[in-house]
Picture 1 (cartoon, one colour):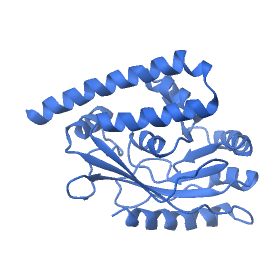
Picture 2 (cartoon, rainbow, N blue to C red):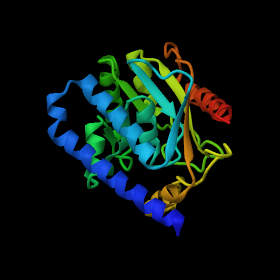
Picture 3 (cartoon, one colour):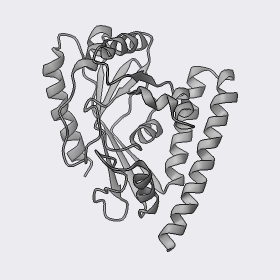
Picture 4 (cartoon, helix red, strand yellow):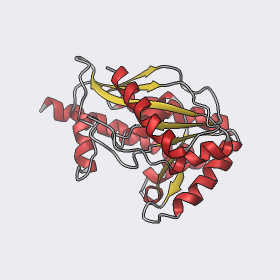
Length: 248
């Protein structure tokens, strides 16, 4: 009963915080510079984690500025908020997110680029947009697994989106993410959202969980010049695996 009451209180505060984010994006963002918007997104994300009982742990050095392409393993609906709390980046996300109530507005406000995964050719369009954004000095984030995993290993990396780094000359920064019990340091499955997992159940499990750590470990930037994207994808897969092991 106590866990459920605490979860309800966390949920109420999180919903209120999300609503305040929606209001900020709709009415304050038009008056702000891009850097000011990015700072607001990062501060909002840190506060959201706090309200959900999650402590952010940043290991390594986040990229200070763009251009750079951040790649990371994908575990949960909570990943983007966690990475935004460490360093704001423009994520590539599935296109149906932009039509979700409330979430769509928050996603648009954070500068998300959308991809229609059902259309294989849409990846080419997104790569062009990513390349232009990187040439303009942006930080772009992608999950090269293409979907979430259970965190026990990594799914194969798709190489297509790495072409944006090769075409623009922007470095790739590998990163790894893990959620852990704050008391024991052991990996927590509370935020998992894999295959047939239900989003509402995953959210509730996260809110009912004991205090959690959201650990983001950043690796060193890698130069794209002379790279073959498929071979590079395999190499980055090993790098992210190693970074994930180092979060323990």
